[in-house]
Length: 395
Image 1 (spheres, rainbow, N blue to C red):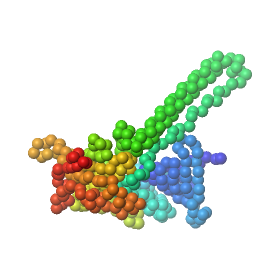
Image 2 (image 1 turned 180 degrees about the vertical axis):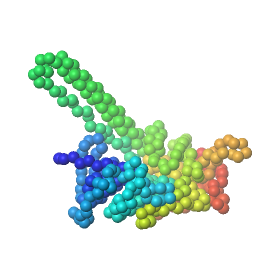
Image 3 (image 1 turned 90 degrees about the vertical axis):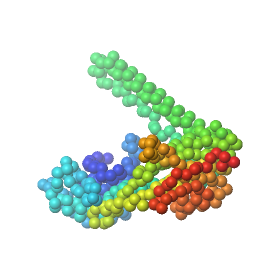
Image 4 (image 1 turned 30 degrees about the vertical axis):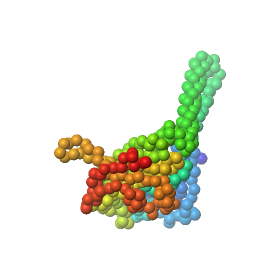
């Protein structure tokens, strides 16, 4: 198999532009999995980083664009860089940042208009991803009884034994001791690498078995294992913004109270992007009122997610009290206060009436309010401090 070389320039994470003597092509996707669109066609590329294994599959049924001549070397002597300015303008320059001949820029835009549009759409998705994650934090809420996810199995391949060369006749005659010492060093390094690999494998497998055991015993109501299982699950939630959860079980271990340290309103993204089809991104700023409504959605969605994780993981729990608070500076004292802004007690029987196959149709605000949430919003949708439910509410 021959080798091909091309220079890759990162535009945004997961989106790269490849320049070679045959023209311009585009790769979309994370390392190990990407889609390449170029003059030779459209391909799906899959690989396992670090192994040398790869797979390539054509997606366009062999349909290719009309042939065209390669770039003129007099005007093109290296890779190009594509960036999107803060105002959404697409800029194509040399890798050094210097301007390119207008004819070359025009040709890149013309020949790769569809690919550039896809790049812009990917860039817009990247810009909007943060806000989408905040507004959709509840969308990964597990249904009651859903099996928790175990840690992944150990997947690293063991180290390979070194290929110890015997050397030629001259080497064996004059460098025998040196060769023997080199072979001994290589073997010692291999044995150490093998021991390190086995230790990492055994440690990960031991953790996996311990978590699996905790899940099984937690499902049967063993309080110590319930804590271990809940710690593991809640620490593994990919919160869109920093979110910290503390909890305490009731005396009968049939209820649990959780305090959620919520993000701040200022953490909400204030800008969205759209690929308008004219070779640029259009940015739109969200109003203060929209940002406040987004923050309300994030807070409700975060508490909704916490309740769902508890009821899915711990079938012995039938009452869940969850309260959210924020950290705010008190202008009178300068100290950081932690007022509660949202609190709700949810019974399992009520929770199980929700249709978790249609999470995208569930509004966490409406759901938690229907369960009797305590909340106070002013006319501008800003949270006021409340008196949250206490442990006595769990009965």
